[in-house]
Image (cartoon, rainbow, N blue to C red; front, top):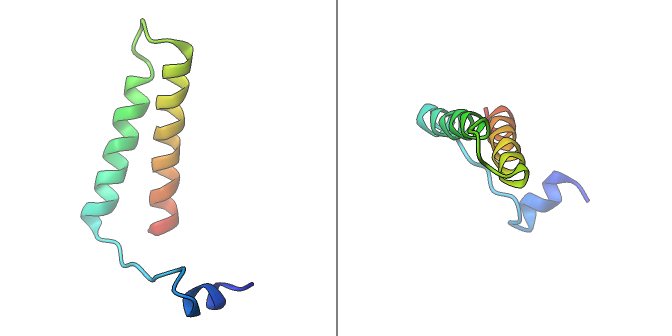
Length: 64
């Protein structure tokens, strides 16, 4: 199945990002990456924050 098939089935919709949307994603990434360094957090919490920060950074790369 191709991306054109997904578009034809309306499972995939074109989206135009704005500079503000990208800035917001980067702000979330920066916040989460900074928060994961806070002492006293469990290893799971640090991992979750670091993962989400990396994910948000990756998202902005995909949509930009």
